Image (tube, helix red, strand yellow):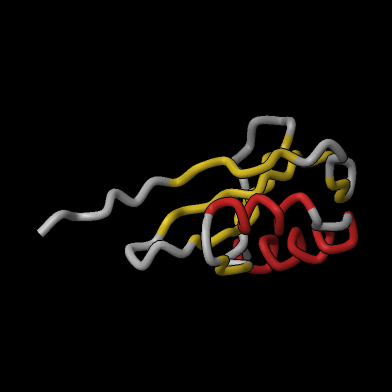
Length: 92
């Protein structure tokens, strides 16, 4: 039986940083293939000051990697703001 290698990938890096307080955070969509061929996606927010990043839980499951890329590229800044707040709450 062949095992499916589960690897995390950066799917998309957003050009506009998310601002919170006096810091800007770089937002990335990351994904990982599942054994059934579908892809899970979540968001990671990295501050410019080098402190640890924040991540959401899974935000989506798509049928394949290309669908995950399409999903990520379509996210609006308001979605990223909400996802950042979810990641912040998760870290608390």
